[in-house]
Amino acid sequence: MTARTFLITGASKGIGRALSNRLAAAGHHVVGVARMPDADFPGTLVSIDLDDTAALAPALADLARRYSFDGVVNNVGLARLHALGEIDLADVDDMLRVNVHSTIQTVQAILPTLKAKGWGRIVNVTSLVTTGFAMRSGYAAAKAAVNSLTRT
Image 1 (cartoon, rainbow, N blue to C red):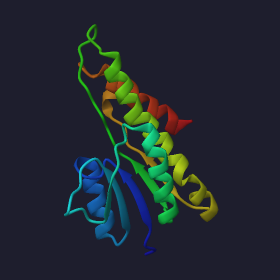
Image 2 (cartoon, rainbow, N blue to C red; image 1 turned 90 degrees about the vertical axis):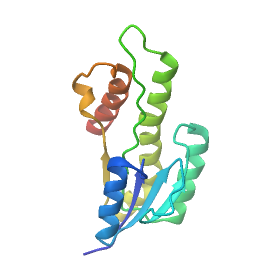
Image 3 (tube, one colour; image 1 turned 30 degrees about the horizontal axis):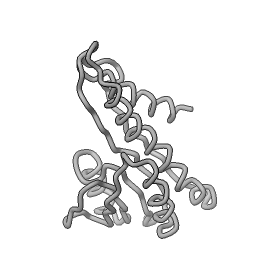
Image 4 (cartoon, rainbow, N blue to C red; image 1 turned 135 degrees about the vertical axis):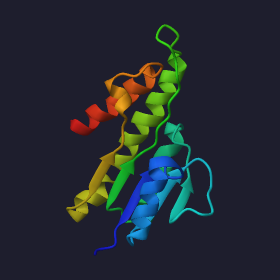
């Protein structure tokens, strides 16, 4: 097996943590991105606020300089629940920024390395809510945008 280095957003809990554990157990180096530190993380965990587009770009550029990534898993998910008719557009902006902007920024930061290697993987985790679930219209819109970005 070839040991590889993967960048995972939303790496400290849920799907991101399970994937981080699995990749690390298989002998890969995981560089996780999360808001809060975690001493038990199975790799290198970097505290980055994916909601801060301006700060995210230089942080990702620094990671791309420090690590020779073989792939990225954009797993972060910010969801805020609203009934239709009560959707807060500020919350929608936050969900788009965290879910869509960070996906674009993360891919663009490591893409030059993947191209130079002639190999790499980009995995964008979305949600079944894009098929329609109550109280999740804004979140579904953001994750549907990630689906479209991935297909395009």
